[in-house]
Image (cartoon, rainbow, N blue to C red):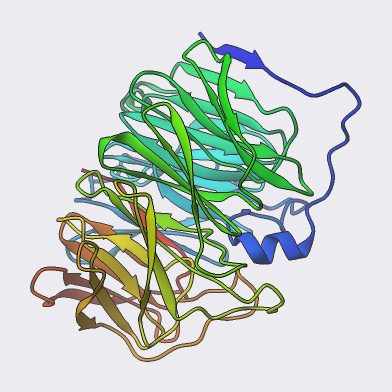
Length: 403
Protein backbone atom coordinates (compact mmCIF):
# COMPACT_ATOMS: atom_id res chain seq x y z
CA UNK A 1 0.00 0.00 0.00
CA UNK A 2 1.25 3.47 -0.79
CA UNK A 3 1.30 6.03 1.97
CA UNK A 4 1.12 9.62 0.76
CA UNK A 5 1.80 12.74 2.77
CA UNK A 6 1.27 16.06 1.07
CA UNK A 7 2.77 19.33 2.17
CA UNK A 8 1.88 21.91 -0.48
CA UNK A 9 2.02 25.68 -0.39
CA UNK A 10 -1.14 27.73 -1.06
CA UNK A 11 -3.24 26.48 -3.95
CA UNK A 12 -2.62 28.01 -7.30
CA UNK A 13 1.18 27.48 -7.47
CA UNK A 14 1.99 27.21 -11.16
CA UNK A 15 4.72 24.94 -12.48
CA UNK A 16 7.39 26.92 -14.31
CA UNK A 17 9.38 25.58 -17.20
CA UNK A 18 12.99 25.07 -16.07
CA UNK A 19 15.35 27.43 -17.84
CA UNK A 20 18.24 26.23 -19.92
CA UNK A 21 20.55 27.96 -17.48
CA UNK A 22 19.29 25.76 -14.66
CA UNK A 23 19.88 22.67 -16.74
CA UNK A 24 23.43 23.72 -17.47
CA UNK A 25 24.23 24.66 -13.89
CA UNK A 26 22.82 21.49 -12.33
CA UNK A 27 23.76 18.89 -14.89
CA UNK A 28 21.18 16.52 -13.40
CA UNK A 29 17.78 17.27 -14.93
CA UNK A 30 17.05 14.29 -17.19
CA UNK A 31 15.30 14.15 -20.53
CA UNK A 32 14.79 17.89 -20.71
CA UNK A 33 14.90 18.10 -24.49
CA UNK A 34 13.00 14.94 -25.44
CA UNK A 35 9.73 15.12 -23.55
CA UNK A 36 7.65 15.52 -26.71
CA UNK A 37 9.15 12.64 -28.67
CA UNK A 38 6.69 9.89 -29.49
CA UNK A 39 8.97 7.06 -30.49
CA UNK A 40 10.29 6.14 -27.05
CA UNK A 41 9.80 2.50 -26.02
CA UNK A 42 6.73 1.81 -23.91
CA UNK A 43 6.16 -0.99 -21.39
CA UNK A 44 5.75 -4.21 -23.35
CA UNK A 45 7.95 -3.01 -26.24
CA UNK A 46 9.92 -5.59 -28.29
CA UNK A 47 12.93 -5.14 -25.99
CA UNK A 48 10.98 -7.12 -23.38
CA UNK A 49 9.75 -9.88 -25.66
CA UNK A 50 11.23 -13.20 -26.70
CA UNK A 51 12.82 -16.03 -24.71
CA UNK A 52 14.45 -15.18 -21.37
CA UNK A 53 18.04 -14.03 -21.81
CA UNK A 54 20.94 -15.81 -20.18
CA UNK A 55 21.68 -13.94 -16.92
CA UNK A 56 24.63 -11.58 -17.19
CA UNK A 57 27.35 -11.35 -14.57
CA UNK A 58 27.71 -8.08 -12.64
CA UNK A 59 25.91 -6.09 -15.36
CA UNK A 60 26.67 -2.53 -16.38
CA UNK A 61 24.37 -0.26 -18.36
CA UNK A 62 25.69 2.40 -20.74
CA UNK A 63 23.43 4.97 -22.35
CA UNK A 64 23.84 6.17 -25.93
CA UNK A 65 21.77 8.39 -28.20
CA UNK A 66 18.89 6.08 -29.01
CA UNK A 67 19.20 3.34 -26.45
CA UNK A 68 20.92 1.37 -23.73
CA UNK A 69 23.72 -1.17 -23.86
CA UNK A 70 23.82 -3.87 -21.19
CA UNK A 71 27.40 -5.06 -20.63
CA UNK A 72 28.96 -8.01 -18.89
CA UNK A 73 30.78 -6.39 -15.96
CA UNK A 74 33.81 -8.66 -16.30
CA UNK A 75 34.37 -8.88 -20.04
CA UNK A 76 32.67 -5.55 -20.94
CA UNK A 77 31.04 -7.35 -23.86
CA UNK A 78 27.68 -5.94 -25.00
CA UNK A 79 25.10 -8.61 -24.25
CA UNK A 80 21.96 -6.62 -25.06
CA UNK A 81 21.05 -3.52 -27.07
CA UNK A 82 17.77 -1.98 -25.92
CA UNK A 83 16.45 0.78 -28.20
CA UNK A 84 15.07 3.76 -26.30
CA UNK A 85 14.82 7.13 -28.03
CA UNK A 86 15.76 10.39 -26.37
CA UNK A 87 18.14 11.38 -23.59
CA UNK A 88 18.03 8.78 -20.82
CA UNK A 89 19.94 8.44 -17.57
CA UNK A 90 20.89 5.45 -15.40
CA UNK A 91 21.48 4.86 -11.69
CA UNK A 92 21.91 1.78 -9.49
CA UNK A 93 18.56 0.75 -7.99
CA UNK A 94 20.20 -0.37 -4.77
CA UNK A 95 20.17 -4.16 -5.17
CA UNK A 96 22.25 -6.66 -7.12
CA UNK A 97 20.14 -6.92 -10.28
CA UNK A 98 18.25 -3.70 -11.09
CA UNK A 99 19.04 -0.21 -12.36
CA UNK A 100 16.77 2.85 -12.58
CA UNK A 101 16.42 4.42 -16.02
CA UNK A 102 15.25 8.04 -16.07
CA UNK A 103 13.21 8.78 -19.20
CA UNK A 104 11.10 11.73 -20.31
CA UNK A 105 8.08 10.22 -18.55
CA UNK A 106 9.47 9.01 -15.25
CA UNK A 107 11.67 6.41 -13.60
CA UNK A 108 11.73 3.01 -15.30
CA UNK A 109 13.09 -0.14 -13.64
CA UNK A 110 15.42 -2.39 -15.62
CA UNK A 111 16.34 -5.93 -14.67
CA UNK A 112 19.96 -5.66 -15.77
CA UNK A 113 20.77 -9.29 -14.97
CA UNK A 114 18.05 -10.47 -17.36
CA UNK A 115 18.66 -7.50 -19.71
CA UNK A 116 15.08 -6.32 -19.91
CA UNK A 117 12.94 -3.33 -19.05
CA UNK A 118 10.33 -4.35 -16.51
CA UNK A 119 6.74 -3.12 -16.23
CA UNK A 120 7.61 -1.26 -13.02
CA UNK A 121 7.58 2.48 -13.59
CA UNK A 122 7.25 5.56 -11.39
CA UNK A 123 5.69 8.10 -13.69
CA UNK A 124 6.20 11.85 -13.42
CA UNK A 125 7.63 14.80 -15.35
CA UNK A 126 11.34 15.58 -15.09
CA UNK A 127 12.61 12.65 -13.03
CA UNK A 128 15.71 13.76 -11.12
CA UNK A 129 17.98 12.37 -8.42
CA UNK A 130 18.06 8.71 -7.34
CA UNK A 131 19.52 8.20 -3.85
CA UNK A 132 20.34 4.89 -2.15
CA UNK A 133 20.92 4.64 1.60
CA UNK A 134 20.14 2.22 4.44
CA UNK A 135 18.30 -0.21 2.15
CA UNK A 136 15.99 2.54 0.92
CA UNK A 137 15.94 4.00 -2.57
CA UNK A 138 14.52 7.51 -2.90
CA UNK A 139 13.36 9.08 -6.17
CA UNK A 140 12.81 12.82 -6.59
CA UNK A 141 10.49 13.92 -9.41
CA UNK A 142 11.40 17.52 -10.20
CA UNK A 143 8.24 18.32 -12.14
CA UNK A 144 5.93 17.57 -9.20
CA UNK A 145 8.23 17.73 -6.18
CA UNK A 146 7.19 14.20 -5.23
CA UNK A 147 9.57 12.04 -3.21
CA UNK A 148 9.08 8.27 -3.51
CA UNK A 149 10.84 5.82 -1.19
CA UNK A 150 10.99 2.01 -1.28
CA UNK A 151 13.06 -1.04 -0.39
CA UNK A 152 15.01 -1.90 -3.58
CA UNK A 153 15.07 -5.59 -2.68
CA UNK A 154 11.31 -5.66 -3.23
CA UNK A 155 11.79 -4.87 -6.93
CA UNK A 156 12.27 -8.58 -7.63
CA UNK A 157 8.57 -9.09 -6.90
CA UNK A 158 7.34 -6.26 -9.11
CA UNK A 159 6.41 -2.75 -8.06
CA UNK A 160 7.35 -2.36 -4.38
CA UNK A 161 5.36 -0.79 -1.56
CA UNK A 162 6.25 2.89 -1.34
CA UNK A 163 5.97 5.90 0.91
CA UNK A 164 5.63 9.29 -0.72
CA UNK A 165 5.91 12.92 0.24
CA UNK A 166 5.17 15.93 -1.93
CA UNK A 167 7.30 19.05 -1.56
CA UNK A 168 5.58 22.39 -1.01
CA UNK A 169 6.55 23.42 -4.54
CA UNK A 170 8.14 21.53 -7.45
CA UNK A 171 11.88 22.08 -7.91
CA UNK A 172 15.08 20.35 -8.91
CA UNK A 173 15.61 18.54 -5.63
CA UNK A 174 16.99 15.54 -3.82
CA UNK A 175 16.07 13.53 -0.72
CA UNK A 176 17.56 10.80 1.46
CA UNK A 177 15.83 8.53 3.97
CA UNK A 178 17.73 7.63 7.14
CA UNK A 179 17.66 4.35 9.06
CA UNK A 180 15.21 5.74 11.62
CA UNK A 181 12.75 6.63 8.85
CA UNK A 182 13.45 10.36 8.84
CA UNK A 183 13.46 12.04 5.46
CA UNK A 184 15.92 14.83 4.61
CA UNK A 185 14.64 16.72 1.56
CA UNK A 186 15.40 19.96 -0.28
CA UNK A 187 13.39 23.18 -0.16
CA UNK A 188 12.83 25.50 -3.09
CA UNK A 189 10.94 26.42 -6.22
CA UNK A 190 11.86 26.11 -9.88
CA UNK A 191 13.31 29.62 -9.64
CA UNK A 192 15.11 29.44 -6.29
CA UNK A 193 16.35 26.66 -4.01
CA UNK A 194 17.08 27.52 -0.39
CA UNK A 195 17.82 24.63 1.96
CA UNK A 196 16.60 21.48 3.67
CA UNK A 197 13.64 20.18 5.63
CA UNK A 198 13.66 17.11 7.90
CA UNK A 199 10.52 15.01 8.36
CA UNK A 200 9.90 12.22 10.87
CA UNK A 201 8.78 8.75 9.82
CA UNK A 202 5.17 10.00 9.70
CA UNK A 203 6.34 12.80 7.38
CA UNK A 204 5.76 15.60 9.86
CA UNK A 205 8.30 18.41 9.77
CA UNK A 206 10.75 18.42 12.70
CA UNK A 207 13.54 20.70 11.45
CA UNK A 208 14.51 23.01 8.60
CA UNK A 209 17.38 25.24 7.49
CA UNK A 210 17.17 27.74 4.64
CA UNK A 211 20.76 28.96 4.70
CA UNK A 212 21.83 27.01 1.60
CA UNK A 213 21.36 29.05 -1.60
CA UNK A 214 21.21 26.93 -4.74
CA UNK A 215 21.07 23.68 -2.76
CA UNK A 216 22.10 20.78 -4.98
CA UNK A 217 23.31 17.22 -4.67
CA UNK A 218 23.63 14.90 -1.69
CA UNK A 219 26.11 12.55 -0.05
CA UNK A 220 25.99 10.50 3.14
CA UNK A 221 29.15 10.08 5.17
CA UNK A 222 30.09 7.75 8.01
CA UNK A 223 27.52 7.59 10.85
CA UNK A 224 24.69 8.76 8.58
CA UNK A 225 25.81 12.36 8.31
CA UNK A 226 24.06 14.02 5.35
CA UNK A 227 25.84 16.69 3.30
CA UNK A 228 24.24 18.83 0.58
CA UNK A 229 25.93 21.46 -1.55
CA UNK A 230 25.27 25.22 -1.60
CA UNK A 231 26.59 28.14 -3.63
CA UNK A 232 28.60 29.21 -0.58
CA UNK A 233 29.60 25.90 1.00
CA UNK A 234 27.61 22.93 2.31
CA UNK A 235 24.86 22.19 4.78
CA UNK A 236 25.48 19.27 7.16
CA UNK A 237 22.72 17.35 8.99
CA UNK A 238 24.22 15.41 11.90
CA UNK A 239 22.70 14.01 15.09
CA UNK A 240 19.44 15.86 14.49
CA UNK A 241 21.00 19.30 13.95
CA UNK A 242 22.19 21.44 11.05
CA UNK A 243 25.65 22.94 10.61
CA UNK A 244 26.70 25.29 7.82
CA UNK A 245 30.25 24.89 6.51
CA UNK A 246 31.26 27.97 4.52
CA UNK A 247 33.33 28.02 1.34
CA UNK A 248 36.73 29.77 1.54
CA UNK A 249 35.63 32.08 -1.31
CA UNK A 250 32.56 34.35 -1.41
CA UNK A 251 31.11 32.24 -4.20
CA UNK A 252 32.15 28.64 -3.80
CA UNK A 253 29.56 26.33 -5.31
CA UNK A 254 29.55 22.67 -4.35
CA UNK A 255 26.90 20.95 -6.44
CA UNK A 256 28.03 17.32 -6.68
CA UNK A 257 29.32 15.13 -3.89
CA UNK A 258 30.50 11.56 -3.30
CA UNK A 259 30.32 9.98 0.16
CA UNK A 260 31.49 6.76 1.77
CA UNK A 261 30.19 4.89 4.81
CA UNK A 262 33.85 4.32 5.71
CA UNK A 263 34.80 7.99 5.91
CA UNK A 264 33.53 11.08 7.74
CA UNK A 265 34.90 13.19 4.88
CA UNK A 266 32.80 13.92 1.79
CA UNK A 267 34.34 14.59 -1.62
CA UNK A 268 32.77 17.47 -3.53
CA UNK A 269 33.33 19.53 -6.64
CA UNK A 270 34.18 23.25 -6.36
CA UNK A 271 33.32 26.16 -8.64
CA UNK A 272 34.23 29.76 -7.80
CA UNK A 273 33.44 31.76 -10.97
CA UNK A 274 29.80 32.80 -10.65
CA UNK A 275 29.71 34.44 -14.09
CA UNK A 276 31.34 31.66 -16.11
CA UNK A 277 29.33 30.22 -19.00
CA UNK A 278 30.98 26.91 -18.19
CA UNK A 279 33.58 26.78 -15.47
CA UNK A 280 36.09 23.98 -15.80
CA UNK A 281 37.12 23.57 -12.15
CA UNK A 282 40.60 22.39 -11.17
CA UNK A 283 39.99 22.04 -7.44
CA UNK A 284 37.84 19.62 -5.46
CA UNK A 285 36.53 20.06 -1.92
CA UNK A 286 36.88 17.80 1.10
CA UNK A 287 34.22 18.37 3.76
CA UNK A 288 35.15 16.95 7.17
CA UNK A 289 31.87 16.22 8.98
CA UNK A 290 33.72 15.55 12.25
CA UNK A 291 35.38 18.95 12.50
CA UNK A 292 32.94 20.93 10.36
CA UNK A 293 35.74 22.18 8.12
CA UNK A 294 36.35 22.34 4.37
CA UNK A 295 39.61 22.17 2.47
CA UNK A 296 40.41 22.43 -1.24
CA UNK A 297 42.66 20.13 -3.24
CA UNK A 298 44.35 21.27 -6.45
CA UNK A 299 44.28 18.56 -9.11
CA UNK A 300 46.26 20.28 -11.83
CA UNK A 301 43.53 19.33 -14.29
CA UNK A 302 39.81 19.95 -14.74
CA UNK A 303 36.97 17.46 -14.35
CA UNK A 304 33.15 17.29 -14.65
CA UNK A 305 30.10 16.26 -12.64
CA UNK A 306 30.52 12.67 -13.88
CA UNK A 307 34.07 12.49 -12.52
CA UNK A 308 33.58 11.94 -8.77
CA UNK A 309 33.52 8.59 -6.95
CA UNK A 310 34.82 6.80 -3.86
CA UNK A 311 37.10 3.80 -3.71
CA UNK A 312 36.80 0.55 -1.71
CA UNK A 313 38.55 2.05 1.32
CA UNK A 314 36.85 5.44 1.20
CA UNK A 315 39.54 7.08 -0.92
CA UNK A 316 38.43 9.90 -3.20
CA UNK A 317 38.52 9.28 -6.95
CA UNK A 318 38.36 11.99 -9.61
CA UNK A 319 38.55 11.39 -13.36
CA UNK A 320 40.43 14.36 -14.79
CA UNK A 321 40.44 15.77 -18.30
CA UNK A 322 44.06 14.58 -18.43
CA UNK A 323 42.62 11.07 -18.76
CA UNK A 324 43.79 9.94 -15.32
CA UNK A 325 41.99 8.89 -12.16
CA UNK A 326 43.35 11.02 -9.33
CA UNK A 327 43.36 9.09 -6.05
CA UNK A 328 42.89 11.32 -3.00
CA UNK A 329 43.62 10.51 0.64
CA UNK A 330 40.75 12.34 2.41
CA UNK A 331 42.54 12.44 5.76
CA UNK A 332 45.81 13.80 4.35
CA UNK A 333 43.93 16.08 1.97
CA UNK A 334 45.95 15.46 -1.17
CA UNK A 335 46.44 13.34 -4.29
CA UNK A 336 48.50 10.25 -3.51
CA UNK A 337 48.76 8.79 -7.02
CA UNK A 338 47.18 8.83 -10.47
CA UNK A 339 45.97 6.00 -12.70
CA UNK A 340 46.26 6.65 -16.47
CA UNK A 341 43.19 5.33 -18.29
CA UNK A 342 42.30 7.33 -21.44
CA UNK A 343 43.59 10.25 -23.51
CA UNK A 344 43.06 13.93 -22.75
CA UNK A 345 39.58 15.39 -23.32
CA UNK A 346 37.54 18.56 -22.84
CA UNK A 347 34.13 19.04 -21.28
CA UNK A 348 31.46 20.01 -23.85
CA UNK A 349 29.35 23.12 -23.26
CA UNK A 350 26.07 21.17 -23.33
CA UNK A 351 25.84 18.97 -20.20
CA UNK A 352 23.79 16.34 -22.03
CA UNK A 353 26.54 15.74 -24.59
CA UNK A 354 28.77 12.69 -24.00
CA UNK A 355 31.91 13.08 -21.94
CA UNK A 356 34.01 10.47 -20.10
CA UNK A 357 32.24 9.09 -17.05
CA UNK A 358 33.42 7.20 -13.96
CA UNK A 359 31.51 4.42 -12.19
CA UNK A 360 33.06 2.47 -9.31
CA UNK A 361 31.91 -0.88 -7.93
CA UNK A 362 34.01 -2.49 -5.26
CA UNK A 363 37.65 -2.12 -6.26
CA UNK A 364 36.90 -1.80 -9.98
CA UNK A 365 36.61 1.57 -11.72
CA UNK A 366 34.83 1.72 -15.07
CA UNK A 367 35.68 4.62 -17.39
CA UNK A 368 34.00 5.46 -20.69
CA UNK A 369 35.76 7.23 -23.55
CA UNK A 370 33.26 8.70 -26.04
CA UNK A 371 36.06 9.82 -28.40
CA UNK A 372 37.02 6.20 -29.08
CA UNK A 373 33.70 4.52 -28.14
CA UNK A 374 35.64 2.47 -25.60
CA UNK A 375 35.05 1.43 -22.01
CA UNK A 376 37.82 0.39 -19.64
CA UNK A 377 37.87 -1.44 -16.32
CA UNK A 378 40.80 -0.84 -13.96
CA UNK A 379 41.70 -2.10 -10.50
CA UNK A 380 41.68 0.92 -8.18
CA UNK A 381 44.23 -0.60 -5.81
CA UNK A 382 46.81 -1.75 -8.35
CA UNK A 383 46.04 0.52 -11.29
CA UNK A 384 46.04 -2.52 -13.57
CA UNK A 385 43.66 -2.59 -16.53
CA UNK A 386 41.29 -5.53 -16.14
CA UNK A 387 39.37 -5.27 -19.42
CA UNK A 388 38.70 -2.97 -22.35
CA UNK A 389 36.12 -3.02 -25.11
CA UNK A 390 34.83 -0.98 -28.03
CA UNK A 391 31.11 -0.21 -27.97
CA UNK A 392 28.80 -0.08 -31.03
CA UNK A 393 27.76 3.52 -30.24
CA UNK A 394 29.17 6.52 -28.40
CA UNK A 395 28.60 6.02 -24.66
CA UNK A 396 27.25 8.79 -22.47
CA UNK A 397 26.40 7.66 -18.94
CA UNK A 398 27.55 4.45 -17.27
CA UNK A 399 26.13 2.72 -14.22
CA UNK A 400 25.35 -0.77 -12.96
CA UNK A 401 24.02 -2.95 -10.21
CA UNK A 402 25.50 -2.78 -6.73
CA UNK A 403 26.68 -5.74 -4.66
